[in-house]
Length: 183
Ligand code: IMP
Image (cartoon, rainbow, N blue to C red; front, side, top):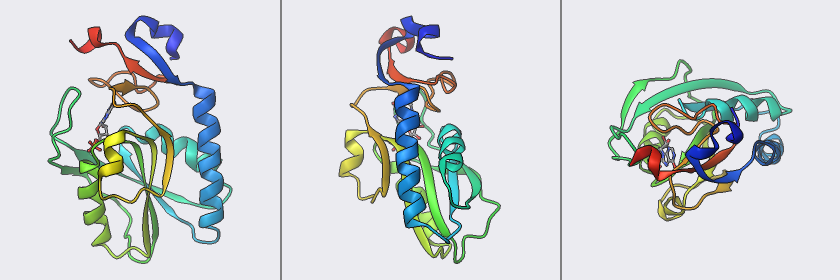
C-alpha cells in the first residue's frame, strides 16, 4: 500500500518510497566499503526491521548473512516502556563475527541499549548499528549509531516496517499518523 491508499490516516508524508530506496542504496554503499571481505551478519530486529533488512541486504554488493531476533518492549500504543524481553533469539553463534544490528527506528534507544549489551557479551569481532530512522531523543542516548537512514521529528510515524497496533508496516512511504487513529 502507498500513502494514496490511506491518505486520511496520515497528516503528513515524511519520506516517499523513492527517497527511502535512494537512502538505503547510499547506506549500502558505505557498508560495502566498510565490510569488504568480512561477510557481515545482519541481525534484524523483528518485526519492524523486515523491510530494511530485505532492501539493505539486496542493495549490498558484498556477501552477507542474516539472522533475526524478536524482542518485546512491554509497551503498547505509542510509548516505549524500556523493559525488554527476548521472544526469539538468534540461530547464529556470534563469536568472531562482524555483526550489524539492523533496526527500523531508534527512539529513546532503550530497546537497543539492552540488546547491544546482550549481543556484546557473545564475543562478536565487531558490533555496529544501522537504523533506518532515528528520532531526536536517540541522539542523547549512549548508543553509537554507525549508519542512519533518516532523522525524524518527534512524532509517531508509520510505514516501511513501522506499525501502529500491527498495521501500516506494509505502507511503502513513511508518514505521521493522524491523531484521530489513536485518540
Ligand atoms: P526505543 O526503545 O524508544 O528506541 O523504541 C524503539 C521501538 O519503539 C521501535 O523498534 C518501534 O517498535 C517503536 N517506535 C518508536 N517510535 C515509533 C514510531 O514513531 N512509530 C512506530 N513505532 C515506533
